[in-house]
Image 1 (cartoon, rainbow, N blue to C red):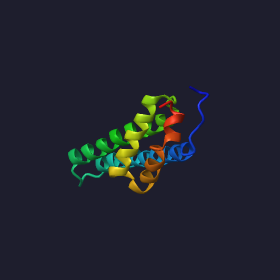
Image 2: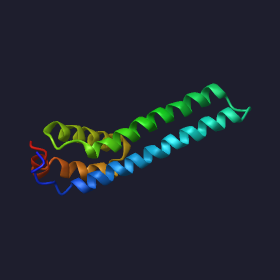
Image 3: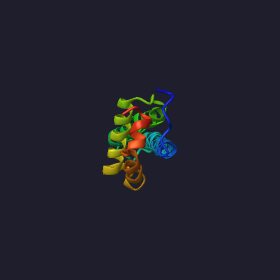
Image 4: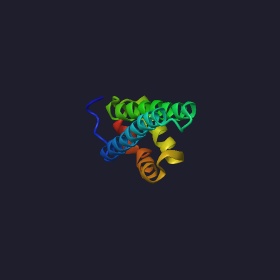
Length: 117
């Protein structure tokens, strides 16, 4: 399926994935900083700080890897659906101002055709 034409929205989708990966890299680094800060400051609640910092590390790390992998998925019909789900989640919560225009262009026939749908 590599002979399929690339959709015009694709570079913008890749930029969205890179932006979101950078956001979650910041979340990951903030979680590490928060964890170190709560462990080194004796006046802070260590258990709560460890929980919050650990959650930021896990969520930031998983989503960083996920958004980094997305542009590298093969252009297959199932991948179009995976990208669509990611955009819907972005529209609903994470980043609606960036994800909504991408969603509108993603559901066009030319984008579907570039994934063999």
